[in-house]
Length: 254
Image 1 (tube, rainbow, N blue to C red):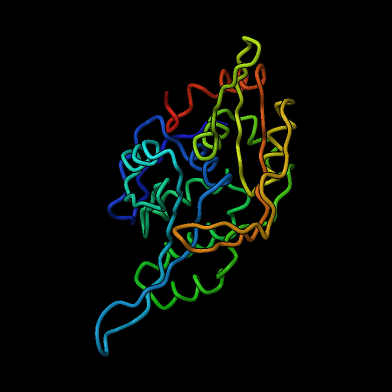
Image 2 (cartoon, rainbow, N blue to C red):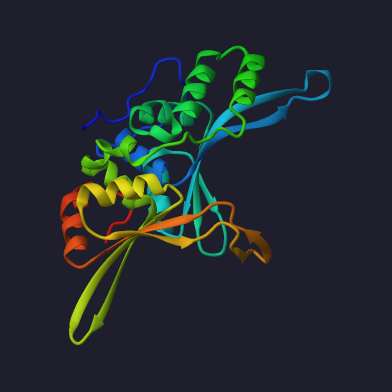
């Protein structure tokens, strides 16, 4: 299930230049496991010329600051600090539309919002229609999925490398002179984690943080709205996974 690299799509302007090794299936892996894809609305103009506009935005944040900077170098957009420990990559408008449309075949949970973004792109000169399109999918940013929706995608190492780039972590522990290598991939998308576990046959999926958990971010109390799950892999499983996806990893480089 390999894909061609992102290509410029006619009628889009200021499209990002993307290196050959970064493909839509990889970005889809990232945005299926994490990240946000939606419309934002703003007012532009002054006085009688003031009006509302809507445009797509893609955003993903991580404490892998170097990886986020590399993503910006590869795909354009901008970066900003998300909090004291993490950084966010953001891309908007036509550039976001191009990337989103290209990854649609590989993003089962994003198909409704991406279809709306495709409609948005088709109404280039009609801002009122664009507002209607954005309003029609307000709050509908993820479709319901099951592990079956990912059965073919998780066989693609480039997709899985995107998952790992977005939310993977590696740690080692030593006990009795034996080093244990552990990989953890955390996400609210339990279906995707279960599909990965089913395909690879190792590790286990467990609840990491339940909905309703309270924490403090930037000095403000925050309550988690959804469950967060983890796929945890140890030793041989970790080595096997890295051997399969290693050459496709782009952001979590050693």
